[in-house]
Image 1: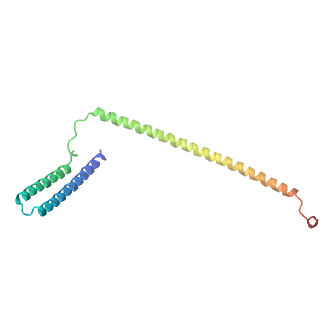
Image 2 (image 1 turned 45 degrees about the vertical axis):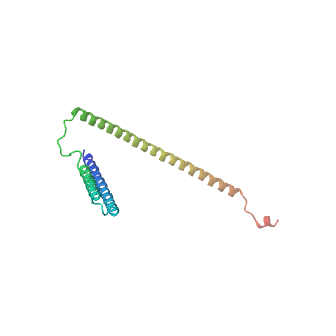
Image 3 (image 1 turned 180 degrees about the vertical axis):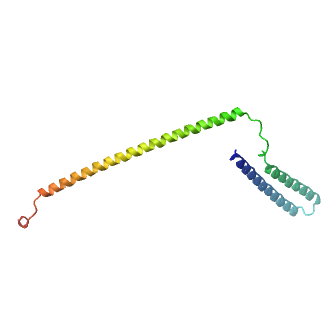
Amino acid sequence: MDELLPRLVAAVNAAAAHADASADKIASVAQEAVAKVEKEQKGSSTGAKVFWISAAAAAGAAAYVAWRRSQPQHDPWAEPWDEDEDFSAEFKSSVGDAADAIGEAAGTAVARGREAGAKAAELAAEAKESVDELIDEAKDKVKKATARRKPATDTDLDA
């Protein structure tokens, strides 16, 4: 409810601002039309009167629309209606149950994530040990192969 009221007030204010902008647009269009008609009919006073009356009526209608849209549709300080208490209790209960289910699912997901991380760390350690053993074996084989090889002498090279 605390989040709903500010949203409602913001929506009403936005509608009022939009209505004010619409009223300003209508008034500016009416003024442009007045200027245009004045240029075309400088000698006709009856047409000018009709136009001015129509422009004033349009501006008044736009102002009324802007004022009406700026009025709140729902009075947030009004006494609450007699709501069905069972419905709200049932709704709160179902929301609470849903929150519990989501919390349980999140806890399970976190636990599984930790298990997977531990298993991955264990596999990485085993792989490291395996690679270290293979490297040691390769070093030993290289040492044995170089030890078996006879060093080259100058007489062997001359021949």
